Image 1: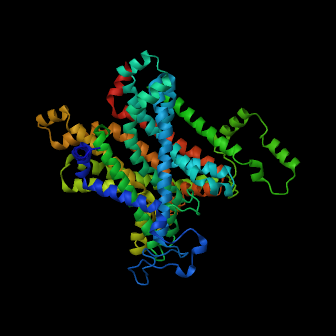
Image 2 (image 1 turned 90 degrees about the vertical axis):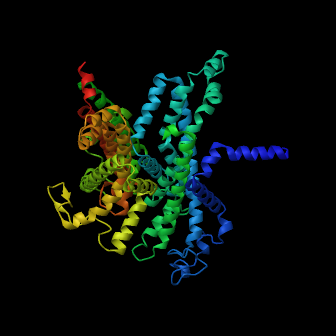
Image 3 (image 1 turned 180 degrees about the vertical axis):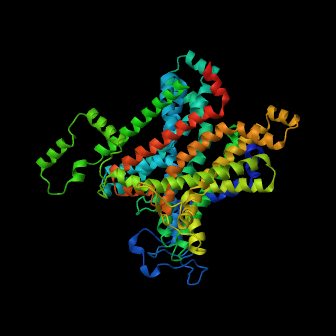
Length: 309
Length: 325
């Protein structure tokens, strides 16, 4: 690209509606920065801390219950203090956020993976296929996703052995949250498909005998996927909350790979004896993370599709 | 109308049968029910005999019919963990959960409707803006964090309210004990009820606000104003009445959710209700309790949905008029 081309690209970028809207929404800028920082720190955890909080060998009980650095008895070695087993809270939060983000993102991917195809098929074929798919979605929508995830997780837990469960706990959790939240994506995709399928370009595609799977994949999908992805952003926040709640209840991720919810659960029992920091910092991290993702999702929705408001 | 009710009842029955089927699968195929009942040294012949006696060798449909028959009579077997009939356990815990849900629903509907009306009618008032902003934060806070926060402030720091349990309970009848007749019972229910109600309050508040804003823009409200009606009559007699359909839908579904979300609140506050029982059942793979809870919660949802559908007829004269023709 020539220099003039680059300058034009830069100006186009800066003049774009979306850039404009982003730069004029301070809350969104902050939320995006916070999310980015959390993401980098969570997945690059070893770069930001030298502790390995979930390797039992590296823990020293002598370090237990150290308060945060600015309190009496705190040390700069453990900025946010330590828990009952001498685990550095800051390091635990980094690794915990990694688990929370992974489960959140993967389970939303799974829900869209189920919801979009079913929505497109329901919307395009109509008739009894549509009725069956959407009726199931309707029924599932009346039950809170967290309850469904709890049921699926509970059923798997009872049907496999405890050791096996440790290994497959995270995939099972992703599956239960993913299966619990597909109906909303199916609904949005279906309503988009209903609009698109009557348009001329679809008629043209049918006329030249494009196979139906190809019509769905190449012509309908790109035109209906946008709104679904926008809703999926807020879906990530919801999935993170569900995961944290299940882990807090003690039925989510196994104790060997704690998420933010597990950390809050561990810290909760120390609240009465005054060790507030063990539960406070993970809880604060969770709230900031969820709030930031929600703010980004709200902004995306308002900018790209004001109709969805 | 009879037709409509019949259709809905049929639909509800299908849903319940479906849930019963899941519950039945859970009960019969997750793990071996026989090995859960007998000790280590039981001989294979004895186990076969027990299997035959319990009818586990019967055809699938016969077994399922028996399961449904028992479930309808409230018989879900014996809890693996506590070695007591499941229906007894559930019946003991039910009053606590229903009381919690009832008080929370009152808070959610009361605050939600009042707040929604206020923010909808006086949308530029500073208090209305503040309410809306804080409701957004309320949605982002997971229920269990709200609970922990309330416990830390009101139980640990201020020491005003208890952090767990139901307080003193009074036995009204054989099967029903209530904490709502004692001072300590009321003190104990405040924090859990607020925790449970908060999310639902914000949802109801937001739906009423947006419906009110919508209705206030319509022509018939403008006409009512032009007629010089009192603003109170306009706001409550005309506007509020016309927002009731979506409000009833959302409120109805939210009361269903309260029962589900009570699992979380009951765990945080160690409230001796059904949710608490269920979580323990999940942790200990106590299948009979799990399947009973599944069926019970589904029943609550179905009944609530049915009531919501029927309420439409009460509040919307247009639906009644359609049915006459």
